[in-house]
Image 1 (spheres, one colour):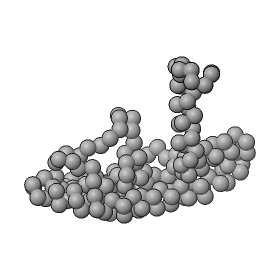
Image 2 (image 1 turned 90 degrees about the vertical axis):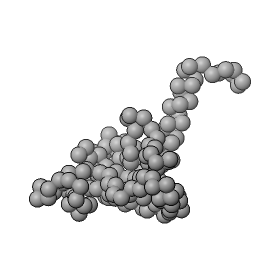
Image 3 (image 1 turned 90 degrees about the horizontal axis):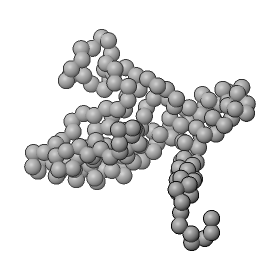
Image 4 (image 1 turned 120 degrees about the vertical axis):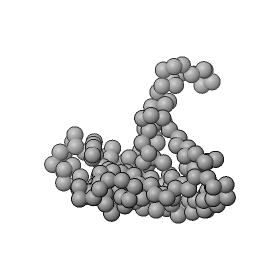
Amino acid sequence: RRQGAPLTDEDAAAWAEVQAAWAALKDPQQRMTYDMLRLQGEDPALAEELLATQTMVLAEMRRRQTAVDLGNMTGEYEASLAREAKVAGLIIERAWYGVLHVNPGVAAGPGVELQDMVGPVVEVKQAVQCLVDKHKIVVTGGPGSSKSSLKGFYDPRPPGSTD
C-alpha cells in the first residue's frame, strides 16, 4: 500500500488484528497466557511443569491490580455514596463476583454472607457503587463482555477454569 492511500477493508482488518495483538501482549497477564499456550506446542512437559506456578502468579497479579484499582477508586466511591445518600438513591450494601454457590449447609436467601459461599468469590461492593449513576447501575460492554474486565473486579477463578 502506498503511503497516503486510503485504507481498504483488508488493510483495516489487518490493522485491527495488529492492535488486538499488541493490546494482548502488552498486558502482563495476557502475555503470560500467550507464552504458556505457545510453550505447550513446543515443549508440553515443560509447559505442564510451569502451569501451576504461572497460574498462581496470574491470580496474584489480578488480586494486586484490583487492590490498586480499589485504592484509586476511594474518592469516586465516597462521592457516589454521598450523592446517592443525599437523594435517598441507590446504595450498594453487598456485592460479590465469582462462582456464587451457597454452601449446602446454609439456607439460600437475603441473609447469606460472603463466608457462606463455596468456590472463589470476591467482594465488589465498592466497585459496584462506583458504577452507580443517577440511581442506576451502569455497566459498559456488550452481552459477551466479562465483568472481570470492569475496574475493581477480577475473576477469582484460576486461569483456564470454567466453573
